[in-house]
Image 1 (cartoon, one colour):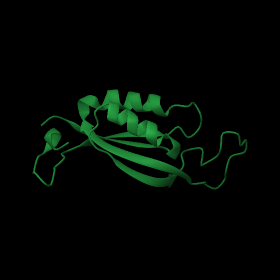
Image 2 (cartoon, one colour):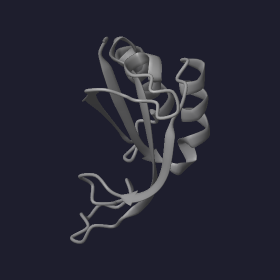
Image 3 (cartoon, one colour):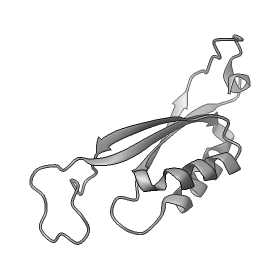
Length: 115
């Protein structure tokens, strides 16, 4: 069985259409989308705010997860990074995890065949 990975992207909700388009163009066959609240090290501070927030401000974000062959991770993450990049606070994060297996319940297919 070849290697499998899960890519999880957390970014601003306004980037969903561009992210979906990029993943589709790269041949990603399916994804899971969730609306979430969160913040990074900036604690939800807007770029123009000079003083640091002492209490975290949770901002609306989207979380998109895809399972892909590990051989495609670099290509996908590089293209997603380009699609999301603005150069400003809040561009997002990309997490990559190794997967032991994927099983399609309906057919019993496993591994890359299940994607």
